[in-house]
Amino acid sequence: MKQKTIQADYWDKKIDISVPEDTVIGEIAPPPIIQDPEKAVRDAIANPIGTPPLSELAKKARNGKVTIGFDDPSRPGKPRQLIIPIILEELLKAGVKEENIYLLCASGNHCKWTAPQLRTCLGPAVYDRFCPHGSASRVLNHDCHDPENLVYMGTSKLGDYVEYNKFLMDSDLFIYTGTVVVSNWGGMTGTGVIIGYPSTRSMTSTHGFPVVGHPDSCHGDQHTMMYRAHKEAIMAQIEKFTGKRVFYVDVVPSTGGAPAGVFAGYSPEINGPTWKFAESIYHMEVPQADVLIYGVPRYSLYGETSNPLIALAAACAPVRMWTNKPLVRKGGVVIALVHCDGTIDERSHPSYAEILDLYRNCFSMEELSIYEEEFRQREDLIFKYRYAYAYAPVHGFWLMYESEYALNQASKIIFAGVPGMDNSLAKVQVSGTGGPGSARDVGATPARDFTEAMQIAEKIVGKNPKIMACPSFWTKIRPRFYVK
Image 1 (cartoon, rainbow, N blue to C red):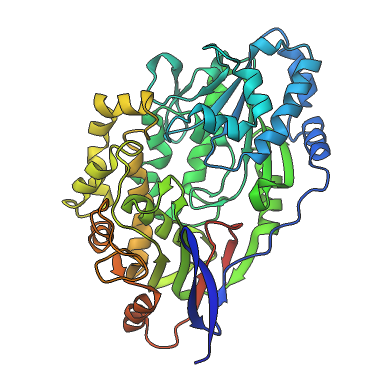
Image 2 (image 1 turned 135 degrees about the vertical axis):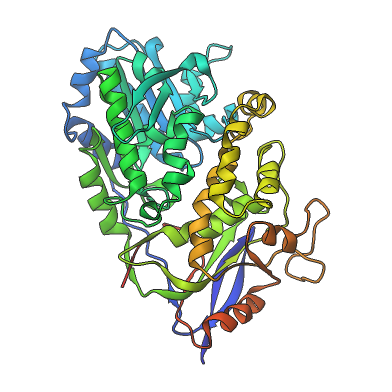
């Protein structure tokens, strides 16, 4: 069979791999960006969906506290740098005092972000304006383990424990600036308050195994997904408890976060039009694959992909991003070009190694979940999260839960290019515990390189399989796959 060469992400470089000529390339062209993005934002906040214009809401809040929430630096900063200055202008015009405006990073159960990271995300002008020299900063990180700044708001109609940042209650107006992209968490992102500001206990309502591991959450249709239903129920409960509604300004991004579309309004009213637009620009029809291949860069999701838990999440997440029918057929093979040598940054992810040790003695991710509460109460891990920029103690559990669907759907998840003693592509590193063993620890199969990975795959799916390759899945715009 004729072959073609494609370039794929691998660690901090691109590598050439040879695939059959009929391999489907699962990439889309970058959506066109808005030529006048400032005007698009101004039009959106002047004509929002399901709510009066922001100018009217700001006038009602002019004597009180206003909070502007924003996606954390794991998302591109360009939308925040575009939207927040325009919102500030609107607030000041309405008579809101600048000293009563706060910027609150929606860090969820991620790490708290350092001052340089937040300054890069927001841009120097906005950051320096709200964080002058001194200690009275009005640029704040959410803290999911801070009892003084979390408020219990009841239970949602689906039984979710709703405990959220008190700024949602104390603010006369709460504005959230987010992004809507294709995701394995909910089909499409959006309604960022729900993921950005919960306590670690509340996060279990969306990220715990009973929800994220449920079959009704393991696909990409946000209209029917269980995970998304819980987000909507929590949002409704927050607004019922506080008696206030959150004003959203969401960007649907193109390359680098440049806006392809801008939408403003209340949730869930904003969801329909935003999703319809996102679906139209991200849509891609593909056949169901026997073998799915994609590149994995050095930094993805929550840190370096040398970390086996992060490598596993990067390898398994795309398998959940399908509509109509599964992207990979039952019993197919997934090949991730990933440099996993077993290194876990203990400062950033102090709980990951222990979670992995526990998993070695569990039959399933569901069984692993019985240890969640122990980690949620661990004072040593909580201290590192609150004061040393580590991820929250339970964060590693979420990565494991979301990966089980792919591990069960595919016959094998192959890590191709893991460092080893006999691997010219990536020699074993002293700092790591060894790539082959690290891959096996998380249920994956190690391979020296792509050629070896394909040889393993063909023993399972046979010769001439249907192949789809996403060589730059994590570094380009992610498609919304409609599987024919």
